[in-house]
Image 1 (cartoon, one colour):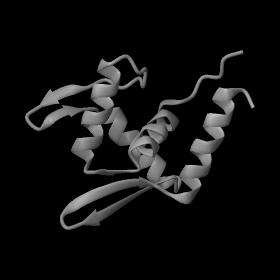
Image 2 (cartoon, one colour; image 1 turned 180 degrees about the horizontal axis):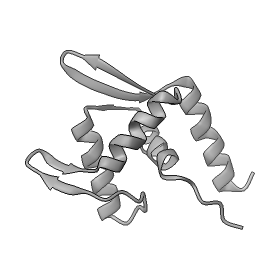
Image 3 (cartoon, helix red, strand yellow; image 1 turned 90 degrees about the vertical axis):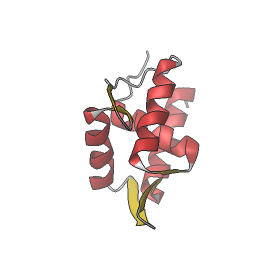
Image 4 (cartoon, helix red, strand yellow; image 1 turned 30 degrees about the horizontal axis):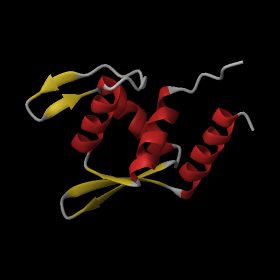
Length: 101
């Protein structure tokens, strides 16, 4: 039986892979590139002057923040996106589910 992982949790895994991401624009680009290379994250993008943008991705990022899984901190006029301790535990659980443990 294959478990379907919701998009916000897939986004959590992407953030975990990078440790921390400097800026929302960078996050949108990372996810856009991952999808263009075949990773199924389920986001739709529009092209804007600053790069690809997904309203759904922004919504999921704010959801993860409200759930306490992601921290978004302002640093020198730039936002820093990273997992919280709780978010790291969720990613660890997702990995064990994927391994079938």
